[in-house]
Length: 200
Image: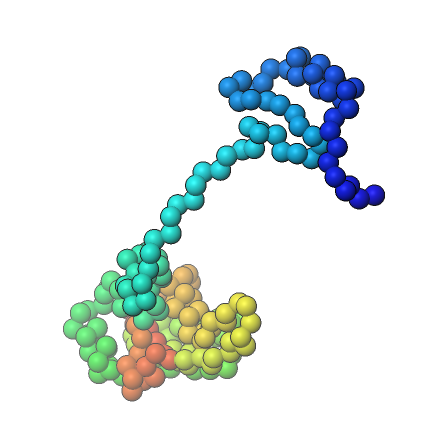
């Protein structure tokens, strides 16, 4: 049944309302409490909302002053590796960065799943250390762009990003002295130099 118009309170309803209001203590005595017709808003009962903050003006071509986003972005993989402290001989490290040192052995993880690549990498690094090798090359590839346009972005080069994590955690971290991106002639950003500790 639709309501075509608002009706006023009957005398009985007004009497009941009067008895209720006499027995209650108002929350805000300074406000005028009254009742109108059914469905009508009662003045003084509507909560007041604070005015919204004004939107700052922005002109096309103007530089944004908010740089929080750029400061909060995590550093890229190359930058993170370059910022690691140099724990090997500095002269040897400089030669390593220029591609002057030749890796003594290498492993190619191209096309492997994470589940297969992890044990292969562990075995390779630990065996190389046991044989007294100092510099090895781990090839991951740069990765394929597998983003299918879905709502969740897919990281390019899963192995490329995961291998440095494995190299910096046990059991491999105990035998590794330095990890660095390879020089272009040894694979560039698709490979890593791994400089091992001396086998004692």
